[in-house]
Length: 169
Image 1 (spheres, rainbow, N blue to C red):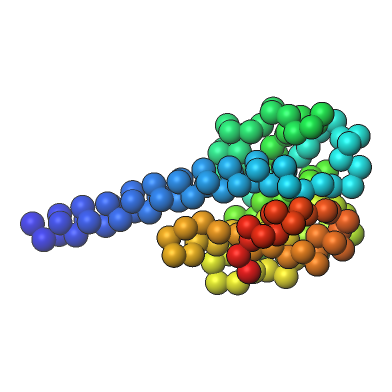
Image 2: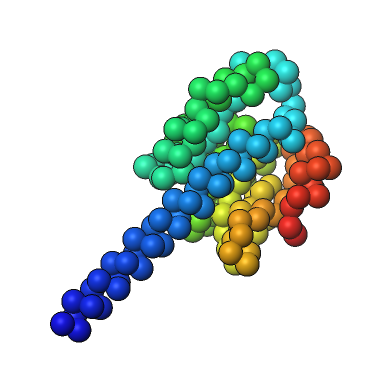
């Protein structure tokens, strides 16, 4: 009987944390969609496609972004969500989402993109990677984000003062 109780509690914990992770991804996807209102990329007016890359294969954030904003418009550009595993694929992105725990693996690729106007977005809880322009973090049970305005400036990406005020650094 005790073993069954432990198994049931363990499964409830896994399902509960999976459900919480799905909720976080929905909120992060909403944040990402709204960031586009407060950020201006170089040559944005002439963009036909606005590409958001998700680092890795089969990540839940790819599925969430695809279902929530893929095909919609930002200005005159159509949003295209793709999976990214190479520098070449990432070069065509305006935003690159790097899931929790994958920053170390993605670091070299992102460093190779340093001169391009690709906005790296991470979700590390214990630190903000130096190469990230935005980092999602859960603080006091609420999703917040940190902003690296110096990196935005270096990449010639204009961040509105409203977005900068919303960031928690």
